[in-house]
Image (cartoon, rainbow, N blue to C red):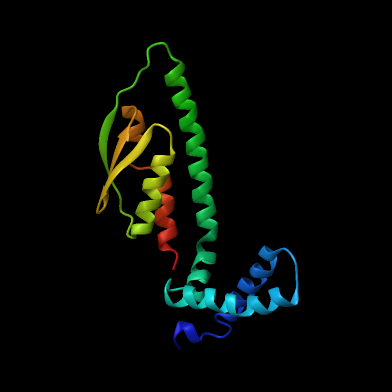
Length: 166
């Protein structure tokens, strides 16, 4: 049976869009309720036809949600640690930096996961992803230690775990 004919597929999303319409309007009147019906339908239709929305995508997201939250927590912790490292460098009298450009090979399969990894690297102070070519990210790092830490980064392994969930 095709995904788009699954029981209840779309009805829940339509109702959520309709309720969002009412919530965003801030009050409930007959006009808002009447206009909300076609607006929710148009938004759902656009999502279905143009954006490829499918209920199965939401279910996959729910399956991956725990891993995604762990990923976000890991990135937040890495940002804090990198901020402390940068503060130490900036406040030290010798400014011990060794800027370098390094290739970081990744085994991530999807373009979305590689983009998430590139963004996580860029969000972390002291590193910035300057280019992505296939499975190699080119990263500029403020110190050689920061660059070396990216070779087998636990954040990339967490993204691989997210990709494995089907």
